[in-house]
Length: 133
Image 1 (cartoon, rainbow, N blue to C red):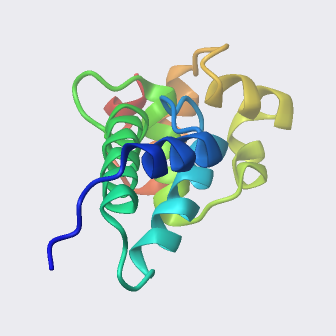
Image 2 (tube, rainbow, N blue to C red; image 1 turned 30 degrees about the vertical axis):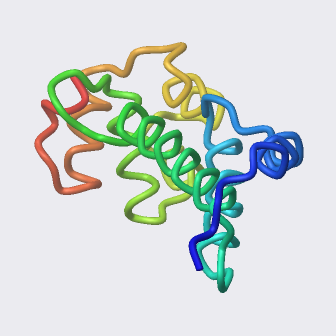
């Protein structure tokens, strides 16, 4: 038996989960929670499959822009990526930046890091300090 897509059921799912562009880590975590829930659900409906695929596309877009280090990445996004990947706390970086306030400003792109801070981060993470300049 082939299951058919029911637009009304899909509208209900969309109203329930309200998927949208992901712009921060909190929204990403919420979307990941829904994806995980759907991933482990037995006998997903065609409507749930559609929502699942949509959320994966939104998550991938966000993570590619937010976490992927590369030539287009900014030093703050590279730093966030390394913090996430290595399970480091922001407070672990206070000794490099001097205060929690400066750590927060750098991570939010509100303040550039100095060359000395970039070098210290390179040593801390054991990566080329050029990633942060």
